[in-house]
Image (cartoon, rainbow, N blue to C red; front, side, top):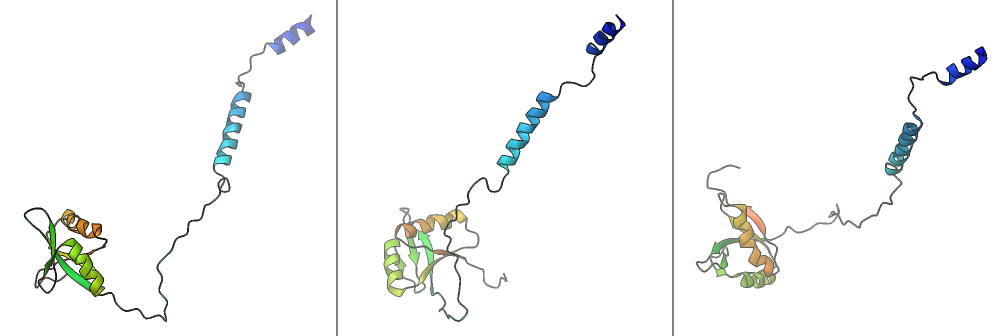
Length: 144
């Protein structure tokens, strides 16, 4: 009888350690998933052809010739551009002139102008097939 009571006592003895088998399996699956996601070889790298502008040390290039254009908005909302010689042309005429003289157009805007003014003045030239640069007019005597 004592042996039987002893067996019952051992079987019913409460254990303070919680059943951790399911938690261990859960964390094991989580670790497996984490290592699979973090593997650097899990995805293939797709190379893209990128062309970086480079210069050759022995090759001499001529400097780009610039054509300064001052944009003006007419009362009817059209943009016109003043050339350095004072001639006023529309966007299509500027595009034809640029092709003839083979220069890069640069819009000269006042120092207090908003960027949106430059963007608005450049849009007609872009529609005509030109990419114009930006230059900000500096006041006389001001050092920048």
